[in-house]
Amino acid sequence: MNHKQRIRSALVPEPADGLWSNCLRVGDQIYISGLTARGSDGLSVEGGDAYQQSRIIFGKIAALMQAAGGSVDDVVKLTIFVTDISTNQLVWKARREVFSGDFPASSLVEVSALAKPEILVEIEAIAHLGCGSR
View 1 (tube, rainbow, N blue to C red):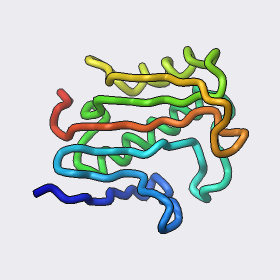
View 2: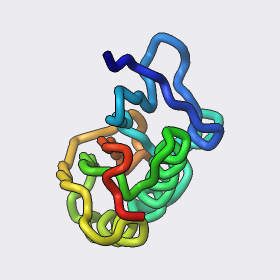
View 3: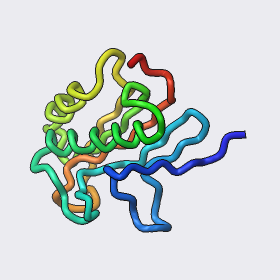
C-alpha cells in the first residue's frame, strides 16, 4: 500500500505547519502545490516579470523533483496561473528553457489575482518518477 511522504528541499521554503505541503510523494506519483516566486523569507517576491518569476518557479519544481528522486523530465502535467494572459509568451519561453522532448501536458489560465499583487505567476505540477528520458 502506498502512503503519503512529504518531500522537502532546502531551496524551496516550506509554509507554516497546518497550511499545505509544497510536495507530496505517493508511490511514484509526485504532486507539487502551486508555487510562486516568493523568496526564502516567504514574504518577498523575486523576479520582476512573468519570465523571471516562471524561471524561479521552474527552479523550485526542479529542486523538489530532485529531492523526490527524479527530474523535471518526470513532470507530466503543469497548471499555470497568470494574472495577465498577454504574458503567456514569457511563461512559454521560460518553460522551453527547462523542458525538452515531450513537454508536459499543460494548462495556462488567467486569474484575477494571486496571493500578493506582485505575484504574477503560480505553477503546480504532477510527475511520475521514472517516466522521463534523462
